[in-house]
Image (cartoon, rainbow over all chains, first blue to last red; front, side):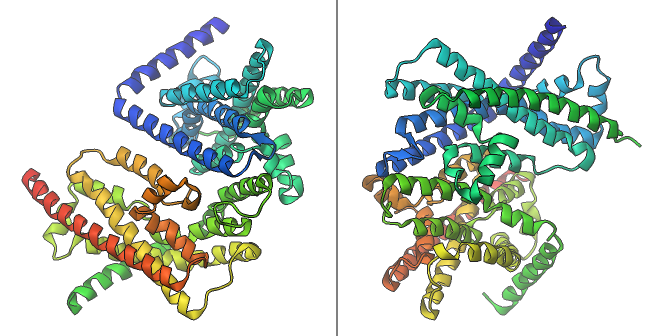
Amino acid sequence: MLARYTRILLRFWKNCLLRDLSFRTHFLVHTGGEILWIAMALVFLKVIFANTRQVAGWNEHQYLFLMGAHLLVTSLFEMLFFSNCWRISERVRTGDLDFVLLRPANAQFLLSFERVDYTTAANLLVACGLCVYSVVALGSPITVGRVLLFLLLVAAAVAILYALVFMFAVTSIWFIRQTSMEHLWFYTVSIARYPAEIYRKFAAGVFWAVFVFVLPVLIVANLPASVMVRTFDPRMVAFMIAAAAVLLALSSVVFRVALRWYRSASS
Amino acid sequence: MSSRAVRKYAVVFKVALAERLVYRGDFFVATFLRFLPIITTILLWRAIYDGAGRDNVGGLSFANMVAYYLLVMVVRAFGSMPGLSSGIARDVREGDLRKFLLQPIDYLTYLLALRAAHKLVYYVMAVGPYAIVFWLCREYLPALPGARSLGLILLTLVGTLLLGFVINCLLGLLAFWFLEVGSFLYLFMTVQYFLSGQMFPLSLLPDGIRRVVTLLPFAYETYYPTLVLLGRMPAGDIARIVLVQAVWIVILAAVVRFAWARGLRRYAAFGG
């Protein structure tokens, strides 16, 4: 069972690599654009810390690590899941979803993993570079356990983002047209980018509470980064892992319920 | 321009106006959503000012900073030309340009008339959502300008619109020489976001870089007009900004005309 799905997954990834490699200009431009954004964000960071020594309790190198963690999590999500989730509404509209449902494998698996966007691969390298550089610059001792915990939380973060975006995507079975996906992702990314503490006083803390505990997008970069370079809060770590598990299970339930409403697109 | 020519483009303007008014669907929601990322930016700046422990970063108080990002939205409503350069590139690439070459109409003036209509519709419809957001944020905003500075402010905004128009025309005309400009446009827009001061006020840049960046037309398209709206400029400085805008518009319009003439020659050579 597991071996079979691994084989399917590897085949998907290989197909996409061949596909991406045949559009090299797109690949280079996309990578160039991403690197430009990161360079601009680094200038912004320099500008910020020319004026203050800390932002919401994060010093320059901790903030840099947060940037790296944010890039790591969002790039992983974009690489593995964004285009897959984005295509779901298109498949519902055209009735192409039929072909996925007919295949002898888990439909959610097929829908979620069919494409890999290798153009974000360069981002992953840059993200790792930022993380390693800032950890070294901070000079605090690193243990293998810390790094493993960080990686586990990054995986949990990607799972949380996947579950939320996937659930949003399958609602297109009810609402058919869904053009707001890119906007939604853009807002999610921009909310999660900065220290979560900046939202504590906004709207009497309701915004913070909702986006930490109900739709936990505020913690996807903040918590892994915090665990690595700031404070280790075991309760929050447990919460994040539990949230990932619950949301994943929920996404499967929502998908199955939504499928009951699905009635193809053909005449 | 003769009165006949003016009438001709007035018709283009009117038709575009009518077409735009049809699609007002979720316009209100979309306009409000555009302010969402600003909330995050403002909260980040709150934390930066708290960290700095003083109410002055780059010569701006926190209230000024909030107003800056809000007013950038107003200036961008004049300077941004969504779809202009990619539209020109598409017309060049797919040969739709022929349609215009056969008619007694100037393609670029036609586009300007079209844009002016789109912009006007946008202002009429956006004034509601903007008024609500600005009213909510009134404590951060500068006092309303007097009648005399209002004239200068409007002049700067018109300058922004024309500057945005010529810059985007020039980018679109690159399609005469390059098959695929979409990716270049994407990279360009990214850099422009930074250079025009949309990411943060350019006064925060280190001196050396700032001196170079503020010479470029992008600073006159967004950054300086925003400072004018912020009410932080004496009338003499505003006049200077309007003048530099005019100089950039004339220079870039000349380049656009030159590129258009050269490009058409290439285009004609290609055509069957």
